[in-house]
Image 1 (cartoon, helix red, strand yellow):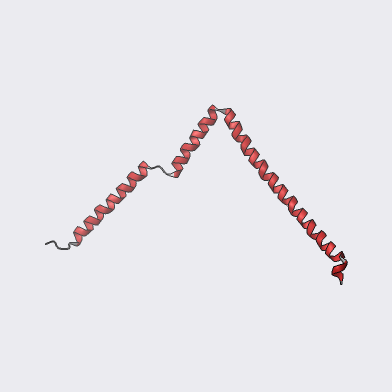
Image 2 (cartoon, helix red, strand yellow; image 1 turned 30 degrees about the horizontal axis):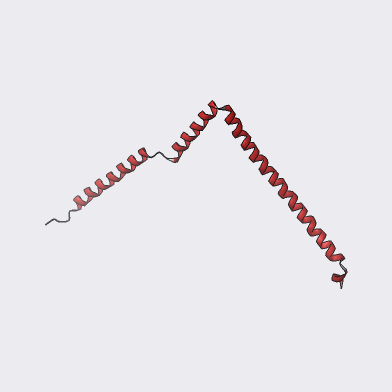
Amino acid sequence: METDNPARHAVAACIAHAGADHRARVVAAMNPGAMEEGGKVASGFIDAMKSQPLALALVVCNVLLLALFAYVIRVADNNRDQLMEMQRETQKMLYRCNPTTCG
């Protein structure tokens, strides 16, 4: 018959904790984090762009095109807001001038 020995439980808990720490370190070493993976992708992209300058020019043109689209959409939105405000003012003036609403 075994007796409950607190020292034995403490040793078992210490061994389990050490095993968990070791497993966590092994998993961390085997699976690089997002920063390492992102660095590898960025490094590969830079290397590819060094060897293909035409591809780099294409990427730059695409980014500039997206910026142009964003600017055009913003300007169109501002113009639409101005036109809507002018239409509201015109509707108010027409409502005041309508003879059926004056009575």
